[in-house]
Amino acid sequence: MPRQSRAAESRDANIRESDVRQAPTTHYQSKLYVPPNKIPAGMTYSWVRETTLNEPDPDNMTDRMVRGWQPVPASRHPEMVPPPLPGHEGIEVQVIRRGGLMLCQRPTRDVAYDRQIRDRENLEMLQDVAWTGNADPNLPRFEDRDSGVKVERVTSFKD
Image (tube, rainbow, N blue to C red; front, side, top):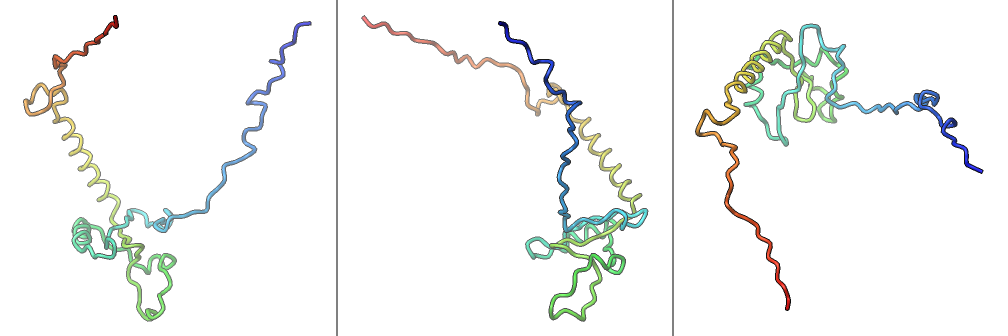
């Protein structure tokens, strides 16, 4: 007696409830996370390096401030200011710091303008490259040149 096929009994993916088990939600939040609804309209926030391995980097901070980045006052976001360390209770915190970084702000229009300039410069630089290499003798050439080395199979016969 021939065996009957069970192909008609297979389950289809559309029958199966594939959305029963949802992906687990994680409650991890980076210490550098700033909720978007806390950022004032028309401003962009960025974390700027103030120290590296506890070594001050005043040149980086000066460069960023010259470019228009200003520290975000701690009074704007008191929830982001950690409680004072023991022995430092009377010191008022002026800026928001996390792990060698300082929270800074800049008008969004200035950030967008600088991004457009940078993108245009990058595009011009890419367009200036002679991709074929044939136009500029200083660029490498990708021509197939046979080295002349050949592999020869040697077979020995035993008598």
